[in-house]
Image 1 (cartoon, helix red, strand yellow):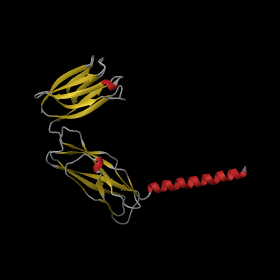
Image 2 (cartoon, one colour):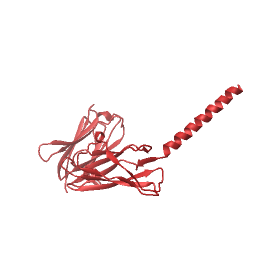
Image 3 (tube, rainbow, N blue to C red):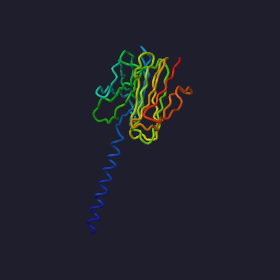
Image 4 (cartoon, rainbow, N blue to C red):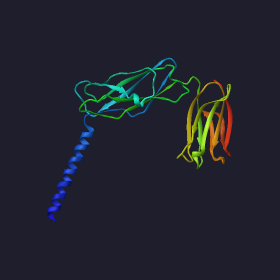
Length: 240
């Protein structure tokens, strides 16, 4: 029996030693991005630049430089961009690099955000953090309106469409359904120019229950409205 206790004690010591080695290796020679994601708003026909912070687990007596690159397979931005080299000055563990993005015809305020996934270019002997996500949008030339949908106990039945009524009614934004978000409020921000709009909220089962409103800060475009049937609609006007 004493022999078994001896083996158990040896096994436990080896296990603890390996765990200590793993913890040590995970914290040394490590370089990572600041917490993300972040969002860049680019004015029409102009260029925007942001600084992204980088942190190292070790302090060095000399400057250190690293290369970052875009993971094109996981990025949707096609507008021109540049990334500078990462520099961590001597005797510190903090550095940064610049991301510069230029607006062009492929970046439109009325479309979903474009994405830029940035990774470190590998260096032997170093551990790097996972990628850093930058969401990119063109600046809104109008106002940002918030469409708030409050679901009932059957959120998978609720959806909505926002129409531009300046000419032939055209759907410009939509949302839902909201599976797994029962009794929740979902806010969607949309960019609207001056003009007339209509919102239609649908309940696929036809018994209603969800509610909605459209606002811009303290301005209420559509008062809180609760569906009592399969659909509800409201119109409103935006003035700049």
